[in-house]
Amino acid sequence: MIIAIIYVIISFLLDGIISNIIPFNLVDPSFFKTIYSVISLVIIYNYFDNKKKYLSILIILGILFDIIYTNTFILNIIVFITIYIILSNLDYVIPNNIITINIKSIICISLYHILTYIILLLANYNSYSIKLLFIILLRSLIMTIIYTTISYLIMNKIYDNKKVK
Image 1 (cartoon, rainbow, N blue to C red):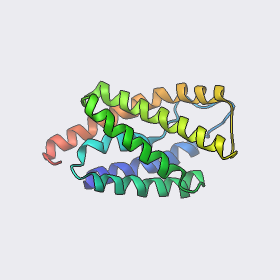
Image 2: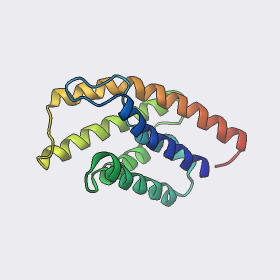
Image 3: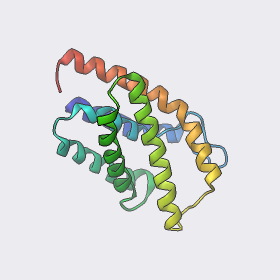
Image 4: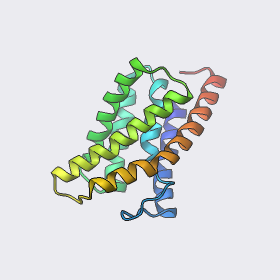
């Protein structure tokens, strides 16, 4: 569990570092931008037998994401819990390997962007066009696949070497 927590912290910090290196521009979103914290939640999901511990990490991450990165109130907690519900349902249907973990990450990143868009639109808070939402989704695919693949291979190697769950 410590390894998973360290990985989530690294991904959370990477969200901030990448945001400073590659600033987000709503007019022209970058191809190298994704939400690393969401990918980390997808990657670590199967390393937890106790889903209460996973949910604790998810909620803490949502609170920190709300406070530090998005300056919203419980938005990311709601979105992360929704991602957890979808991820737990996907886990019954899709086995875990490098291809399917990428599919799960793409679904979760897309879900994050779509849910955030809908919630912000309903709240009349910083709304943008649906066309821009699709551009953001398409452009985040590259980095989502790269980061998910690298993370999955590293975490799989670490957990196989340590023989821990």
